[in-house]
Length: 325
Ligand code: F6P
Image (cartoon, rainbow, N blue to C red; front, side, top):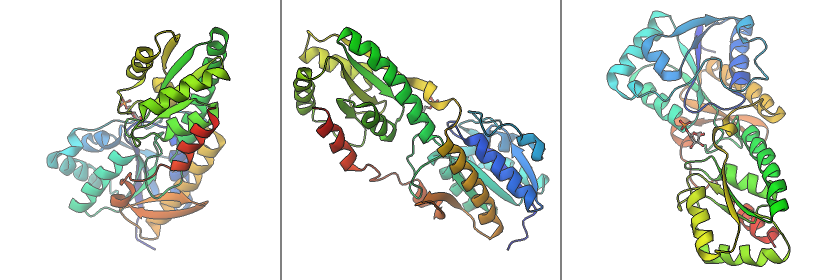
């Protein structure tokens, strides 16, 4: 066990449904263990500017079901500078904070790793991003909700596409990651899925799309925003250039995927990782992310968590192709 007495919690980077459930779990686990718990508003930006306040059990009441983050979030430029990090450290010390839980994605953990190199503060991370693009966890908080939101939207698009015999190109989020696109694509029966991790064979895709006309009156192509073609409109242009007679429409789902009530999976994951992160801090863990692997809480260094390499299961890509007949 450590001598940690005062911990702080922040959310940083893009918000994700389930972040509130994670905040609640961190605050209540801290209180359960007799710690004083502080909230930091607007992520590292609030740390740099000293936007730090005490939290109690009541301050996290009635939030487990809410999307967004009650702590607010930001992508902080000032924390990237040595002066910004020095100010952040001064504010933490002034509050007597001797442990930090940072909830976010790769930018959050890259910042945490940098801070930990310069200052002696134990930090444990919780993966909160709709992109699911971190190593060391099977799922990130928010991914399941985002995918379900996308599925719900595309099911509706399918109804109108079917009525008009149209082809829809639907762009989902994921600047560097195609995981939302891939899971959504399988779930809605997409005719093709385009993701940044895999080079597209456009000829093969066009052939598949044309072949599938025999069996279907509507077709849906799911495109991750970071796809090499340049997103939904660019893909639609290519399809129209090849098949001018197709009735093509584009729908960009955008930030709707970041909001909404978290699913059961995200609430449970957030609760487990919140409890696990504080337990980890108290057990002396530092500069690691608490992830969930096969239902167990496991820890991985920040450095390794942000290596988003090889997380695409190529079998899933193949499944889309097989089932798109
Ligand atoms: O990282 C989560 C994410 O939603 C990505 O999928 C997306 O590319 C990005 O954030 C958008 O960020 P912002 O809301 O800052 O434009």
